[in-house]
Amino acid sequence: MGQLLSTSSSRRSHLLPSSASNAPLGKTEADILLSDSSSELSHPFPTEKNNDNATNTQTPTLLPLLKKAKGHYYYPVSGPKILDACGGAGVACLGHGKSNKSVIKAITTQLSTVQYASYAHFRVDPVLQLEKFLCESTDGKMGKMYLMSSGSEAVEAALKFALEYHAWNGQPERVNIISRSHSYHGTTIGSLSASGHTTRRQPFTSVLNRTNFHHLPPCNPYRSPLPAEEYLSSLLTSLESLITTLSPSTIAALILEPIVGAALGCVPPLPGYLSGIKSFCHTHGILLIYDEVMCGMGRTATSPSHHLHAYQSFPEPDISPDMMTIAKSFSASYLPASALLISTPLSNFLTSHNKVFTHGHTNQSHPVVASACLAVQGTIQSRNLLSNVAAQGGLLLHLLQKQLSQHPNVGDIRGRGLFVGIEFIADKTTKQPFERELDIAGRVHKTALKNWQVLVYASQGCADDQGRGDVIMVMPAYDVTAKEIREMVRRIAGAVREVFDS
Image (cartoon, rainbow, N blue to C red; front, top):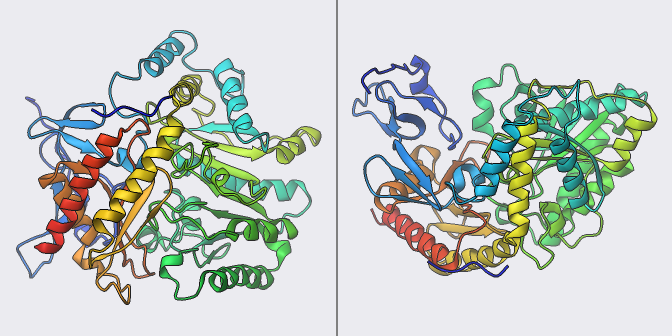
């Protein structure tokens, strides 16, 4: 293995709802249902057509039943081991198993000290330490942390904070939220209202808020026919026009992913885009929220500075947000964890005006979760893993482009750090996407898993509002080696070629 850079007898039956066969296509790896027979899990993505063409139903594919996970491999009960090239949804940033003993020790030690204390009644040292660490990681731009359990919770909290902040400031009429199409911010009604991903919204459109949530075009250079400078100008003009239409005094916040994850597939913005967005927001008193749930906490490190946060990887001066949400690689999913960070000015406002955010969860500021996050981040720092992310991420992008960029059905290979997307197209010249019913991303996912024993993240909907556009994402653990990167690329390229050759 290559070296890192220095530094039963009873069975439970679960029935699928009858409406499952009519569920919209374009689902992603996050949509899980329980199977109807064994202890294995099934999943509406990928799916396979039923042989009965009259009913045109879909039969969920049974997922492998795992025996264990160790290092960068999953070990099913039966069959060969599976190379993990995506960490779920870019979550398992330290790999799997007992190798990270310091994290496990931190969790068990905290369990035996204070396993729970309500945030409303007590302060606990791990939470205070974690808040200090996170604020310092932003060079003091962030001043307060709200610790939660999932990215959706953190986004929901950010939206609510924006509304309450403006009410405190005597501007309760600021009730509009700006987001972008082809975006995904969470599963709750509020965070899904902010999302612009068509197929994730579709089952719930009747209850989503379409009055106060407004969507801009995303920054997706691959899909624009315009030169970069002209395209950037058109995007900022669209924002200016929307602000004017809504009236600046009615807008509470703008939320975006600095590097778009599942909705587009690892798409970085054009230079000048984030600074342009921030300029408009601050001119009009609109709070800027960065959703770094997927792209943050070291996932997109690319430079010698090796900053934790995605927005810090861009050379533009002071593009820090007013609020930021983090999750996934925050705790490496040793425990469910997320956080909302608010800027130092906002934190100071709370103190000076004696205000308390009207928001809380039962397990908010959980001491064991805080201990897990501290240990994970400590491991990343002590092992100098952000240097490895930068180096292996560069190698990953280079090798994927070398192997697949000339393939007639590979349109774009993009990303930063260990956050790389491969978009598939029907025509390389016109960039025409495949029809979503063909489920190209799902086919690549299934072929990679079954025939090449490598796990990648698959999604649809990156090309248009009809759910078309197939992409797979490669997001290995931060301690991946060059040898493992080369093996991942070999298997992924093999799976892609097999799907299109067949």
